[in-house]
Length: 533
Image (tube, rainbow, N blue to C red; front, side):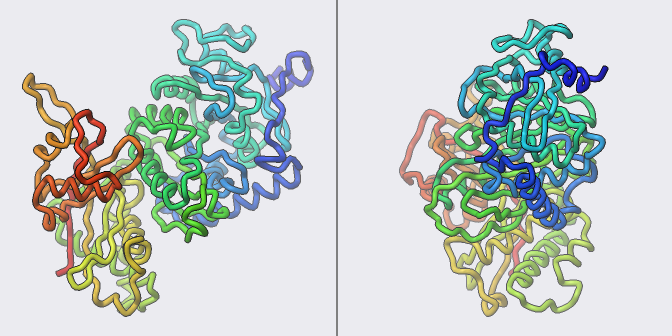
């Protein structure tokens, strides 16, 4: 007898977790929720058509999705679920890991429930998988308060029913999963409380299984900062997630513990890579900015908002997904540089609706003629006019194809740098373009007298370790203030102390600020820069 039949015939063993947020986070009416989800999936499918060639084929193994009310975050979540739709008929189990908003726990908690109910019906819980991860006997009942047995595959896993009773982070994902994966779906619902990345990662590894299982990480981003501030914070968090920078702080993502667990798994998986799909905020009225594309105009820069993002990761990625770095350009850098600047100029020309000289000068033609632009890469695009800065936008980590990165940042530098008015068509011929391809940021370290290598801890150590003319610099404090200088800034600020002072000011930190306790995180990177002269 299969589990579903057993549960139907033996009502006294069924423990159904009823919906806690139906009617608030999503419609309680079956017809209404189906209509809303289908509308949002249609929106997601159409957006993803613009990125189809950037993603692998097949079904993602893991996704990160937001968990706010559907009217706020449903369109961002729909990007990931439109991709999971590829798994209908083959993906039959979802391991859903969310945070604990209401009842805090130590560890990663499963409930005693054997099924979760939503307006779309009941979904069975894979209780056998939970028992196995906990190290329990096959017939041992799940009781709230139970901890994993010694030697269990998931040592930090526990059973805690109260933390699931009113929690929405897992619940809001289930109707989407029911819609895209169908009636054969089973789930493993988990709430990750206080736990290390490895502890959450061990739970995921214990439940990872094969292609029949998808990992769903439930998290929003920043909470209730002014819209302009929230976008800046979220952009950095998104970059950190894409680069697998551990740990993500709970102030930056309410589902930081689940996210960190996935990043812990992926950091050991050279065959997997996270792809950002798109992001938004509660102030964007459901409009999502695809990865690498400009965000919509803000209705009110001071409006408190919540941030959202969707990611997806596939198994067995080809080597072509390895990021292209400054070193990868090698001896052919000159020709590559010509292509990069031509691509940036074409992107600005298209944004300003200036006619192309020839068909070969369009962004689509340039991308098609240069397959190496499909490799992942990070860049900054800088615009000058008459020797004066006119715009500069870029990314620190590679999260999309280099060609798309150049296009997105060229357009942003021309139209969305908050320090300048948008470039006009009349100015276009006056622009000079520089494209800087970034190497991977690395912590700035020094060697101590006993031969150990450690990060710089003070401003004095930082300024002594800097290499003028060569190092790009990233500074960040523990409050979330951060800023970056390209190596080209050394031309204007050749003194290390002045260089650091101006970057601190850019990060909204006192320029004279001195530190000796490692309070400022310091990273350097190198670039290969190509400019029009």
